[in-house]
Length: 622
Image (cartoon, rainbow, N blue to C red; front, side, top):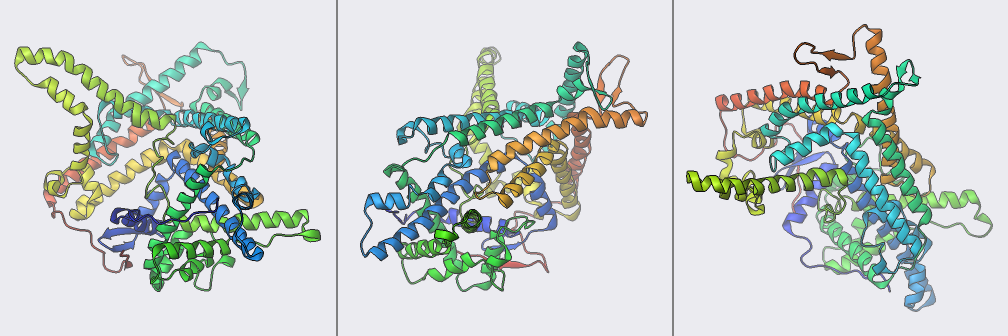
């Protein structure tokens, strides 16, 4: 069956259009101010984004969307070749001929068999689609790898996970920027830190070290949490590797062809909606070009040989040239499909010229062209815009923190309602109905919506969450205190707590760069993440279990501080919970000062953000 391009009349809603524009602005280093106005992001905001991007949910989201988009690029490339073949034969290809030329071709099959696609497209590799036993085993190995990934994340940051579970169990819907969150960090992290330190100390006391590493007992190294995350990362990589060994080419059935065609159609329509706005507007075209290069612009996604003199990617120029505002959406989408298919073509070596080196260079060139398509489409198809499969892609840690803990919170409230009902009868109170109301989904949704309700701005104006999200509505001292408190919270959560994640991120990026430099297919983000966790956890375990104690012994200061006396607890200086507790204290103090300053300076009202003088800004309308 040929690739079917269709237009959906209700796809581009005002909300979706704004989300797409916000994503383009974000990836280009800008942000939404109000209405159609956007401005350049401050360096502070860029640093916050960079620090906050260590979380595993970003890796999972990128793996899902990129794997889908690489499949789309391969299909468009092969579809264009099939159309050329049809023209040469002066007839339409039969369904069987088209299937062999496109859906079942090596180019498309290689993208459908990538680990990221197997793992994060759960509706594709299943029995209903008639997959072979090997492919079903590939899916099972991939699912195992995803489970191991979740367990790895749980052990990579046990302090942070324990805190998040306790917080979400104790209170529902706590925003990370809120004063309540900072207060809970102050109250809980110290206890969590002491508990983990005492647990590890008890384990060490039950076992005697039989070996040493760099003069330190090897047990200190082996029982560290980073070792567990490192081992699980390696096991996750091996499970993913087993999935890649098991998977084999298969015939794409009509149902799968329709689903893939729908994905391409939706992305072409979303892309068209933005290209019509960009056409003949040089400033907006430059914004789009920057967005295609990536949010942080550290490593360019599209090299200079694929850019014109103004720095605009050739693929963007081809897409803009293909559309005609006078034509309807379906005609423009067909023209866009043809233009992108033409751009993705690479001359394939044949005959005597098809040497091993020539075939290698051809495969590299194909992947490069496809990566340009991914860079273009990721501006309109991204987890920051919409992620309908977000719940299905949650790992074990996210399911525990974001699903199990809130569910336990609601169960506890409903359970407390039974004894409270007896008290209500005796004391004529209404505690039980209140507890049941707090546990109801409708009440919790209503409470969440209250913070963003403009009509309640005057009631929310002195709440920490509202203050952090509407900092422009306060005086200079209040703004300064909010920025300092948020900066310390981000440092606490994304640097101190995420020491394992940050180390793993370095090795993850090294693996991605190495594969993309040498390999002929796109690097698997999920596999590289597992490798990053393996090396990052191993390095952190050596640092915490060996080098820090060595440094402490060399300086004559112990690696633990004992309270002795009536409270015999050892506070380890290498314990993440203790470090976070020590940092959460000034964070809460500065947050309190922000509240005091807000009362003294006053609230300016629910005013819109404005563009400061001298800050570059632009209009991005529908």
